[in-house]
Length: 141
Image 1 (cartoon, rainbow, N blue to C red):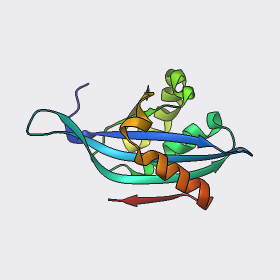
Image 2: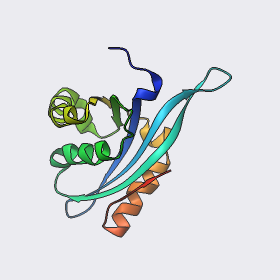
Image 3: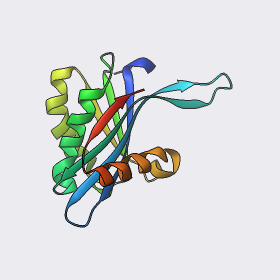
C-alpha cells in the first residue's frame, strides 16, 4: 500500500537500561521531507522522554502504545527505528503492536537501525534525562 509523505511518521527510539531493571527511552517523532536540493530530512514534531521498570522485551509494546498516543491524527503508517537488539525480532513485535494500533487506523513497521544514536543524538539526551528524573514526559514541538 502506498502512503503519502504526510501519512508516515518515523519514531527514532534509543533505549538505555539502568542497574535495577529501569529502562529509559528517548523518542523523536518526525515526518520525512525533501529539501530543495533533493536530500531528505526529518521534520521533528513531538519528543518523548520515557521511564519504565521491567525488561526491554516486556516494555517494547508499552513504549509503542505511548508513541501511538502521540502520533498526529493524519498518520496511517508508523515506522519505529531503534538500535536495541530486540528490534531484530521485528516480525513478532510488529504483529503484537499492529493488533492495538489497528484501533487508531495505523499500521506499524519496525526496523532495527544501529545508526539511531549517531543520526539522532538528541534521543540520547532524552533517554538520559528520563533516567535522571525517574519519570516520563512528552512534548509537542
